[in-house]
Image (cartoon, rainbow, N blue to C red; front, side):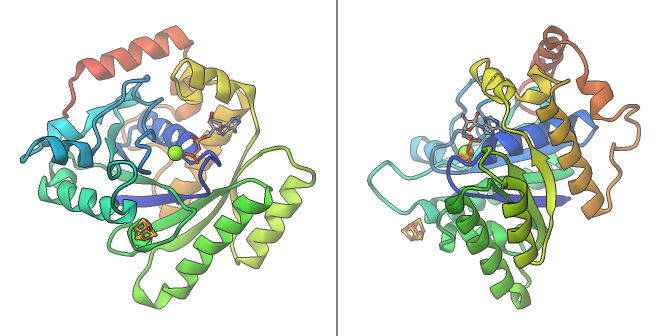
Length: 286
Ligand code: ADP
Ligand code: SF4
Ligand code: MG
């Protein structure tokens, strides 16, 4: 099982990036689980076609014994969607909430029961406090990617996360996979992020254009991979999947899958929707 944590400043495009990456990896035949670790609990929104799934913490507040069926929902291409959730607004510690949700998933044997090949953590990265830094640790993740644009505040957050990884390297923290450039179209954006990557001793693993397709698909509650598979943005998410799989030494498509994402995703939207409906028809569980 490959475990990947994706960090970045709030609003930079983590959930969009992670959801599209999850969609590509699933279309390539991998069993993928996406775990949203943002108290907003909106990580899996487009994968779930706009359906808000109950978060693990909400379930724990409502029932003494939440089940895997309650917590894990099958989204587009069969991606297993989970939201950790957060405390009641205005109370409690969101970082602690992430830890509690992880403990609950472990208690439900989520990884053993559902046997994902790849787990993606979508983590709010403004604060790298106790709770939100948990996915950085080696027992939780194998590799960490950071989403950034060329804007100063997002590069600052990226740098903080990279420094936390560097500081705790000796303590078996996850390895740093690199930066995902999610463009905001600031001047000299590529050069700015390249120089940050150099400073951090890493590279840019994917370059996602600022794209109206991303917004349009979000309005339709679709990933770009599903809603605009021929777009430049969808190609960039395909390239990100290549980089992630190459880094981990995994094949670009799981054995037995004939085509890569370009082949499988290049179906018209209506067919993609039908495929998604079929995936949902399988019910919430594998
Ligand atoms: P985060 O999870 O980091 O808070 P989101 O993934 O929710 O951020 O993205 C924030 C907003 O930016 C969303 O409305 C999303 O559609 C938009 N967005 C993200 N990436 C792009 C992109 N490459 N092009 C255009 N809009 C984007
Ligand atoms: Fe909790 Fe982190 Fe906030 Fe501290 S910084 S109160 S650990 S969420
Ligand atoms: Mg998000």
